Image (tube, helix red, strand yellow):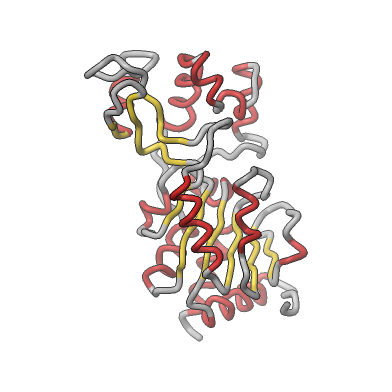
Length: 258
């Protein structure tokens, strides 16, 4: 483990040095990566937990398989409001990771987010543990739909149904009570195991089984960037409480001068 930096400049220089010497970097991220793009997280004061006041249940309950099947209209009311009405743009964190991939330094970006912002920024080796809001399918005939198809349907109906068979359309999002996709799991684990540097960003590491993936890391150095403490802090080479976009982009700028 390296000495802990004493200020933001030292911190970014330390991170820049780790980025510079590594060509096998895995990134594991959560909701905090996208909050700088305006995407609401779960646990902040203006996050999704405020939906308890509106719907009477937690967002985890609404985003469960049981709730989707039993209360589909309420599910889509929540889903449309919090996931479809806004079109966020990638931020500095997404851009920095895409740049590192262009340099050939990234083994994979493993994300708990469903917003597709890593791909929008240019990352290609992305493993979306919880699926994506960009893709949908009919539970009846299996037909595929895009996000704009569903937006168009929800403009006139409360529950989107397949134009071909009338079946219920479901997001390709892994809801609570559902299993993670096997191929995505395999790819994510391979990317983390192959890395000699792991960056953990914007996650409390409280959502399982996703949080357990960091335990597959076998390398020497961990950069952990999160506004609040996590149980993994003690394992990190560098712990930053800064804004992830500012920290990563600042460190990348320094790295490119080394």
